[in-house]
Image (cartoon, rainbow, N blue to C red; front, side, top):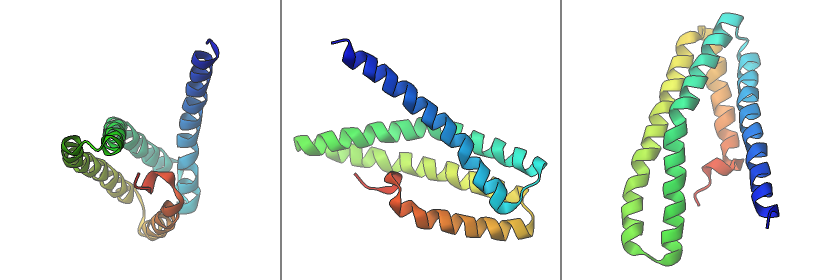
Length: 138
């Protein structure tokens, strides 16, 4: 049964590499879409890193609670369902506050022209969110 632990370790390593490489890639389109100069790009990258770091724990907590909720629904445990349905919204709100703060701080770095481009970029990104697995309600 060495195959399962080894494949699990390999899968974790691959996922980690994908996560870290995707976060570096995620900043590039914003820089080019808005025409950020070097100083602005550095500030935006710092803001985004701070937001990712601030989002890490609440996102993990939210995912754990959502998994617990799915298990409770499968088990038809109404007490656990009621408890978890009260615990999830504060985690979602905390993540929304971090996200809103990130957008506000990015706007403060931009020129008026870049701000209008940023608003358009956000609308396009939000329009694509429907195809993202992150917005599906499991």
